[in-house]
Length: 231
Image (cartoon, rainbow, N blue to C red; front, side, top):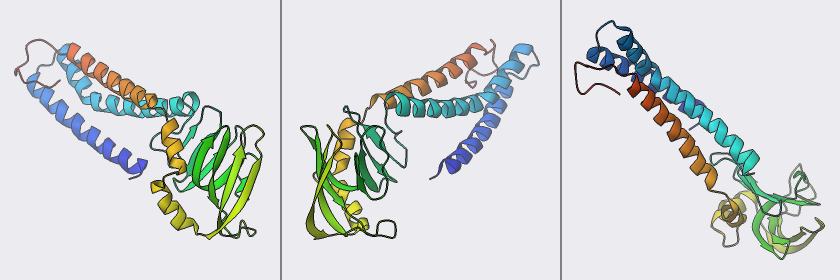
């Protein structure tokens, strides 16, 4: 489900909740005093404050993930992580694995100084990335062999050595099975992904929502008509 769809659902839900809360508080505090009116108004706008805080938290979470933790947010269509050595391991559209050196962009052909694309297997041993990639042949890479090839990427000088396995493969089938492969690049991705940005997300979100609830409670006038009045 897209962000636009979720945004529409949350907006409609906020409007409905706002109406419900306003009616409940008006039933409990029908008088026209300033305190009662203020309480009714704040109950009505509370869902929109909560929705706004949710959006602000997502933006903050994205900034923390990308610029402090140096990894993608959990809902990104192009997940990546930065390893302790500065190299980046990720996947374009969760479907095309890559590794590249700091400051190096992946390009065409799918292998070059400091980067490899179309990765299937990937391990880091003694400062070298060792794995396999699919040397796809297409209009963008007509020199491709269509074979699965071995590679060794040395992090000390960004040099790459390759050798052919003579095993034919196609992009779709290889990337479909890579998630279950014992030495898949996803293993390095999972092992190096930080969990604390997610914890920070929930702390920020729940802290803000808690503050909104506390504020509304503090504005509640004394002497409601019902002990079951809304928050």
